Length: 197
Image (cartoon, rainbow, N blue to C red; front, side, top):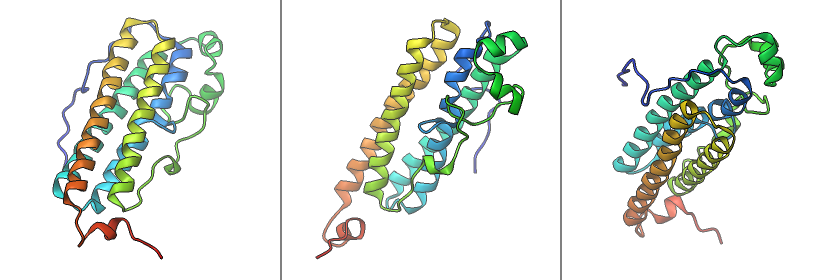
């Protein structure tokens, strides 16, 4: 059971709308390495994680990713609030506008809608944790790329926060992998890594 606090994990207060930047940042909502996919990946994988500590780490991070979905949505909303049709067109959001007006819609920067194909859950804790560590690095790289384009300090500040959380999540999944490896023995090793002759 989750308790919802009616505040963002980190404040988002963008004063200057920017359609082009919104078009890029929305990928961290519904793109292949975005927060929506991350939240679902970890919250699904936790069920088959064999150790309570690892389940806890997956639950903690999956829950925080939901908070990041909320932050990205707030960023995109504030970047698009009050745009004129000319600004929408100049920023490359005209096709998005036709389908969604300025509603928040989970898609990549290229306009590809979110799909469950973006996240994996294999049921093998070692496989899943390597997937998770890679996912956090890909998300960090995407935030790096966004920061290369964003010059507005109101946007850069929450994006930097989100980027830093990707690094922390990578480290926590590394901790979960160590916990898993320390618990492997002759009785359970092949349950996660079957040997085929």
